Length: 154
Figure 1 (tube, one colour):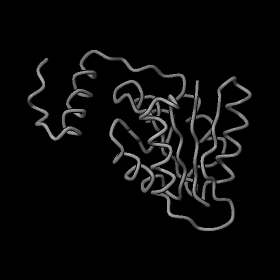
Figure 2 (figure 1 turned 60 degrees about the vertical axis):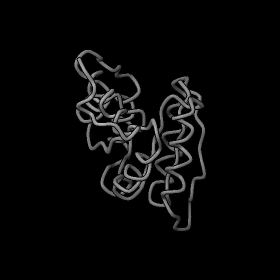
Figure 3 (figure 1 turned 90 degrees about the vertical axis):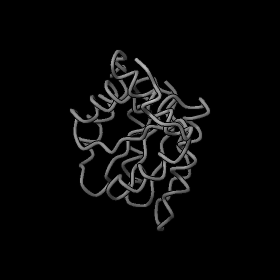
Figure 4 (figure 1 turned 120 degrees about the vertical axis):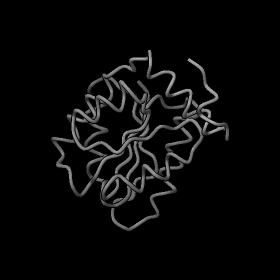
């Protein structure tokens, strides 16, 4: 799988460690504008990864900042991105199976490296369930287009 990863200075070390693990598992990983030693504006990196995912150049994305929240807010502004802040393996699984999230956002300050690795592993292997959840994704897509979500039928 093609995966784009980026992080601000608070998640740079974790991003590099995840890159190594994912490559070892056979994924094609692209590090995008990692900021190791100086503060940066996370919306820029979230935008870059969001575009790679939305355009299909990457199948999934991983974004890491202090809490994961800022990256998620910024990435979700990119049309076609469904970025989820994930705190554990269960939320990683549900973000994929129910919400078809294509970017996982992690906290560099609140999650340890081992937990991040577990979360990413679950996020990468969990398929989207479809069914009733597909209708809900279509409603999210309607909102992106400026349409009313209740205009989407079964």
